[in-house]
Image (tube, rainbow, N blue to C red):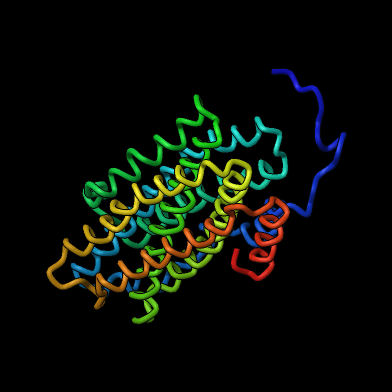
Length: 299
């Protein structure tokens, strides 16, 4: 369809909206180069690790790098839907998503190539629960937006991407990396990359909570759809963690499965509680709360 007007020449940009606040943070904090992270010490640490420690790192990297590639491949329809609704401030922030997800893919693949040179097909680490989320649920939810841009479809897409993939699985994966590497003072390059990556993802999650809160406020009947999608994916998300631990008689680095199940459940509960606050809230209230979260440094 031809354009009939442009926001920047008819009303201007609303720089007070949460997505614009996130855009400002992305411009300041999201410009880092995976190619510039020093991996010298990481190579030395890798050489001193055991076979099972290598295997666990390959397993985690194999899940992370494919997950980042998956969202890079599948994200465009969400951006297109927001653009088609004329939400220029949200679309401007969403342009940073694709760049950042591609950058994360770049970082993990660089680490595999230059430090952990895996001589195996890492997809062998993708068990059934991982397949369900990343090979099926994620592309189904995001790519379906090409044909169905309804608020319900947007809820399913954002829940799958922002709340479950990023808010539960990715954050639990970061927790695993920091637990095993910081505890043993290993791989400073990998830790630095993940800390920068986590900062990017925290902004993504903040937007996801904003988007879902806005949708639920505008369409209160969508709360059941949101809960259904969250709860339907939770067993597979927890299953991804269980599958990883089941591969080892004694988990490397002294990791304890229960610690990570509890961490994932805490993340799930925290996301649900944040979204529950949107029920019955006004858009002004949602904007105020989201901006407060952003300004506190949590996004």
